[in-house]
Image 1: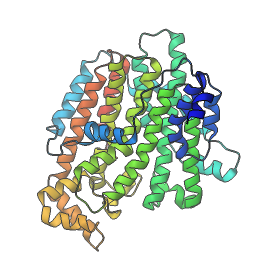
Image 2: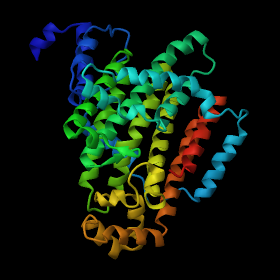
Image 3: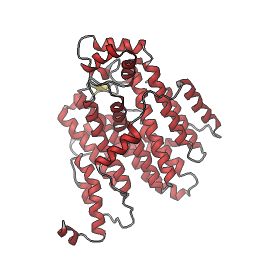
Image 4: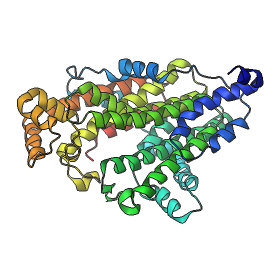
Length: 419
């Protein structure tokens, strides 16, 4: 260590510290090219963020993001929706989400396909598989809306310079999301995704694993090229959270633990959205309170989105969702919010089903019946509504603009979705 200190001085020490940040990404990808890129980048003008140990970070997440009291919900789901619509109507413009960021989304759609191209034909086909299907892509939409809202009032030249980087953040967000879906399908043994065969079904587990790793590596390289260490750290954290969340979910099977469930959906869903929105704010040089508002906007939408998604498992069919439903999570031994709420109302019956991971014939059907005759779906919707309202509160921290209107409109659309 002393020898290292004698050799690494000045900018070299700063670069060495930067590499320690990037090592989180390198642990989850196949390539180390990102290290070479950073060693060739001048970091003298970059501010190094304060680093946290994994243990410290877990404590903060558990305190601030995970310990949500499942007994205290956000009141009436309908009332929350009415409040959101009321905020939306107060805005001075009726710009839609599409008209606000349509041009940005077109650029990203084209750019993503270019970013995931590779010479090997099998890996190339596997990596591009899901990007050739028209999906919701609401994660990059959120990032772009935050970016446009923050950049309001800047000069056209400044906006275009910053937006080019923020579009890369949005692009990387979608690529990381798809990589996480590929890995999830392998872990879960899923046969379908978005209404078509899953990547592991189409190409086999080995190619699917490599394709997911390749996408993480490509997104990591894209982010490194932005030249902002704080943004790289944010996404390093996201990739770690995705793995952490999957392990938490596996460990939670057969248990009735709402805290574990909420931590899991933060790690697996909300963290990516929250940190991506925060990265867009960081690149704009926004003041701290706006950076935190961007993070909270993404975090609460992410939590609410997953809670809503978990209710659809009990209310919609597979054709609408584009993925297996009607107890799909239970068939994997996973207990989501509706199951956990039903267990509060019918503890004796539900806890027995949960403890054996719904493994006996008829267990899934029995649990479905208990959910339907309880108020579990309504309670889950109310909990989601409380987070949708918090997302609106975060959006209202931004200056009034057509983009802020679009942010609130998108919250309403997500809240009202039925597939």
